[in-house]
Structure formats: structure tokens, C-alpha cells
Image (cartoon, rainbow, N blue to C red; front, side, top):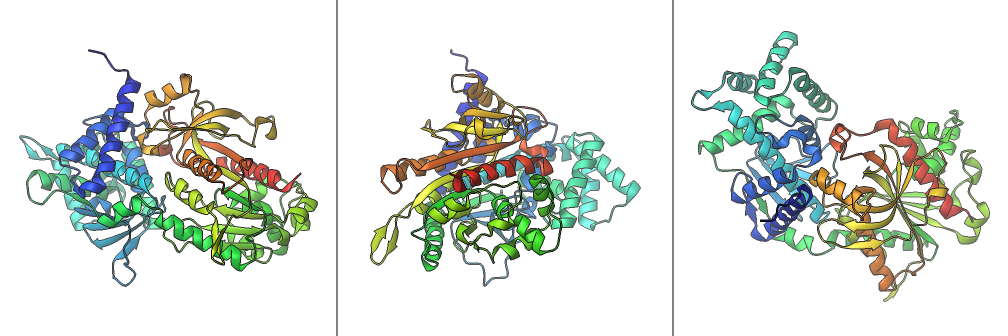
Length: 560
């Protein structure tokens, strides 16, 4: 019998997980502790994603992975016994509490203390993401339940103490806190110091953002739920998929509403015939580069000589920049479609060139000649990128006929995982390879190595567009990197943007020579221990590469 390599086993596990995930909206319901949930767990364990570290251990809890998942789930998810995935619900007139995770733009509601409803508007990537997180939590919950109920001796003393602390809501101080953390460390199979660090991480997020209920409640919640399931004291956690979710996944409803809102605003402001430049990026770097110095000057503050120091200074002064910007051609469009993608429309003819930072060199003559309008759209999430770009590039209906909008360039920037190089380095895609489906797209990238300063590490080559950041395996990534694919990094949206742009060219919605620019900075290295996304955000390390790429995109658009 042919022995499969680790890479082949991992690719098979990804395929299995995707197939199961795709079937669930049709099936309508599954139980994380049931047969289908078990198959999802088997696939995830076989895949052994780098971001989940010790998840595959029967005894040791995975704490960094737990931090990553809880930050992306609503507060109280550890208590859930019933979860609903839906494509559209109107809860505004109810008393249900709206919950937003700390690090993911997804809307959910607490219908009751144990029932949560997720309104999914961004497509299949969000389904994969949530199912991966729920599967991980159930794997960890099973470990905790085994440690809590130590057959044949029964419930352990450590679990009884944790139960008492949670039930009595005891306020722990100094010695009692250290003792409680020691008991918890025994349950988790982790050193006391690591357990304390994780408690401090969650406690800080709980106090500052109200994003979770603290480590003691989280561990007790997921462990107790599985214990009760094992004893038949409650029904198994059930995850339901409503029919309208399946309809949403096969149509671009929210993207179409989003696109129509944007195009209507362009028409209302007589911008639909101007040269349009799409920039997919964050919501601060383009704005701050164009308006930051002027905003600081108007506020009577000193403008730093170094443009990147100005960017760091403006991280805490976003409001003064926006107040200044709206007086000089800046129009923010908050999302009302449900897509969770904000847009910034910038009329470059109204920007004050005399107020730019001295280090920025843009051509006033080119702006006067071409009258460009920038459409800065917030980061999309996975497959949502195709839906948004496909709808945006589609002709607009005006006076009972479809009119092509004059798109001149499309620039995609963001952060990604790097496979060749280090955190903070820059990646320029020459192609995008879609994981799981075998599709690949060439990129005629208008950004090249020579555009960047010599002291910046820049890598050019194909990039992998992955199903989800939580579904990445070292063996698969190393194969893509070291084989003749020569992949330099991985991200979630680029390939889907490519699909939409290529389709628009084929359908003649945009010219075949439209300028396309892709650039990413490395936020993590998923094949290096301690440098995965679970290790936390980059912080100020990401400011320079983010603003460098933004600056180069603006120079390409605004200079001859």
C-alpha cells in the first residue's frame, strides 16, 4: 500500500474539512460532539495547523490557539448549547444583545445565555472560519472534560475548586489567585507561568473591551458543557444553518447592495465619469498620507520630519485627520449593506497639495489633467473579495442603460504570511494559486522590486490564497514553497480578487491593460514556531511596511 507523505495527508485533511463544511448548509444541522463534528475534528487533528500548536495532544491544552479563537468569537461562546448560522435576520427591534468579537468584523447576537445567532454576510470563508474555531474549541473541551472527570475516581479536586470559583463568582486576589491558577494549570496540563500569562491576556481584554468572560469562565464553560453531554444531562451542542444562509452563499446579495450604494454616491457627486482608482487596504494609511500633515498643521501640532514617524503619531489622532480630510475631498461611506466593508472616496482635485508631507512627491499636473478619484475599500474576508470586486467592476445602470465606469487601476495591499523571509518583509505576487481547487491566475503586477528602497527585503513570486488562516499545515506550506510552485507567502483574498478582475476583463467591463498592483507585508511566518498569527499582532513593527506600500501605490497613481 502506498504510504502518503505528510504533505499529502495534510492536503487530504484540508479537502475533507472543506467537503464537510460545504455540505453542512445543505444538511441544516450538526453536532460538534456528534459524528459529523467528530469527522471535522479528525480532519483538523490530521491537518495539525501550525496556529493551533499543541491541539493534537490528548493531555496538553493549547493556550495560544485559545487566545486566537476567543478573540474572534462573541463573548460567552463557552456557554453555548445552541448556535444558529443565518444569512439575514432583523434583530434591531429585539432585546437580543449584539456582540462584536475583538478581532473580527462579524455580527452575532446573544438570544439567551446559551443560544447565539451569527449573521453571516461575507460568504463561505466565514463559514470555514467559524467551523474551524468551533471544532478547535470542542477538541479542547474534550481534553478538559477528561481531566475533570478522572475515571474511576470521579470529579477531580481541581475541577471542584474551579466550579466553586465560577459559581460563587469569587473575586480572587494575590495568594488565592495564584492557588486558583495552579489548580487550573493542572487541569490544562500547562506550566503555572503559561497559565498565568493566558489569564492576564484574557483579563486585560475583558477589562478594556468586554470581549470575553475571563479564563476561568471560558475553561469551565467549554469543559462543563462536554461533561454534561457525556452524562446525558443535556442535549449536545447543536449548530443550525438556516435556508436563507444557503441562498446567500450562492448569491452576491450583500456585495450587490454594497456596490449599488457606492455607485449611487459616485453618481450623486458627479464622479462616475472621472478616472477611478480602486485601492483595497486598511482605513488609515492612504488617508493619513494624503491628509496627515495638513491635519497636524491645522491643529497647531508639529509635523514630524520622517513620514513614518508622522504615521505612528497619527495612530492616536485619527479623528483630527478625518475632520480635516472631509473639508478637502474626503467622503467616508459607512456600510449599511451588511457586508461590513467601509469605503473612502477621495476626490484628488480637492486635496491641498501644499499641505502634503515634505517627503511626498505627487504630480499636481497629472492630477489636474486626469482628475483621479480614489476608492479606498476596507479589507475583504476570503471569498468575499470576489463578490465585492465582481459587483464593483460591473457597469452601472444609469438612465435605463448600463454604463461602464472608467476604472484606471486596481491596487491590493495588506498583510500576509511569509514563507521566504521574515516578519516585516514585503511580498509582490507574480501569480495567485487557490488552495483546495487547483485554480491559478497570473498577475501582471505594476509593482516591482525596483520600486522599493534597497534596504527593504522584497520577494517576488507566486502566492497561495488559502481557505482560512486556521487551516494551515507546515508540511503543505513547505511543499508549496520548496517545490516548483516556489510560493513565497499565503493570504486569503488575492486569488479571489484576481478571479473577479479576470472575469471583468473577459466580459469587457474593464480594459485588458488596466493597471493592477499587489503588495503584502509579512505579519507572520506560519512555518516558524512563535511567529504564527496566534503569537499576536505586530504593533508598531507593521507601520513602516504598511505606509511604504501605501506611499508607493499613491506614487504610481499620482505621478507620471
